[in-house]
Length: 91
Image (cartoon, rainbow, N blue to C red):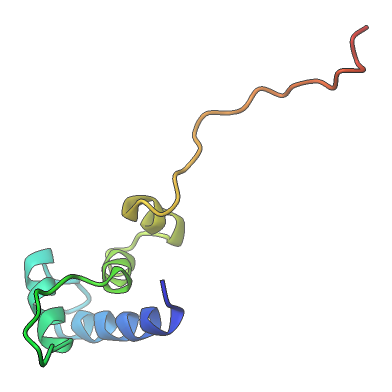
């Protein structure tokens, strides 16, 4: 993901939140608004950029780690690893 695009997406989401009294619109409405915002002159099939999905999740109040986990970028390790003792501590 590109940080510059994330900044633009966050500004777009903040603008939408100001219009909606601090709430992010529903996902379907958000997709339509992003599609209008990112007009394609060639009328190619629209694919939601990851940066705008990330900004949407942040607008919903998720943390950076939660957003990455929800997007499938980083998997949270919930299982604790066994603390293996060093091989020389055998007595």
